[in-house]
Amino acid sequence: MAAKIKRKDRVLVIAGDDRGAQGEVLRVLRKENRVVVAGVNIVKKHQRPRPTGRGQVGGIIEFEAPIHISNVMLICPKCNRPTRVGFVVEGGRKLRQCKKCQATFV
Image (cartoon, rainbow, N blue to C red; front, side, top):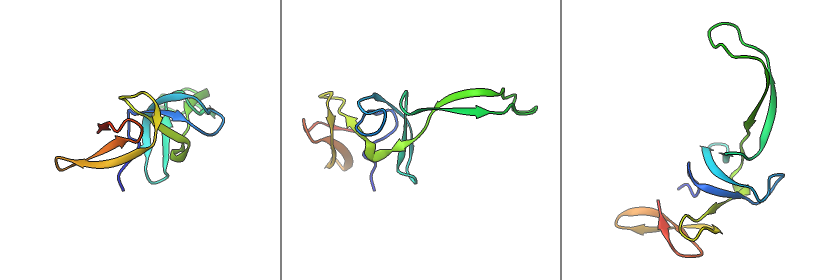
């Protein structure tokens, strides 16, 4: 199955607490059907200090938690609008296609 959303894509969150937020995809977790988006779904974690070796300090850390891939929509790099993604084969390569402006991109 080809990936409709990839790393470094700009996406719009369409469901959940962060609905309406935009950000760049940092990681795609394919097995869990989740993505990590910069600045979206920030959670706090209470972390204990680790002993020598890692040098990790304790405290409350904030990080982006994964959200389900169905809760984000790709923002087309050409028309700059949230869109669904299709696929088209051009020159022997399978490319993603914007359903609104029909632009193709990798």
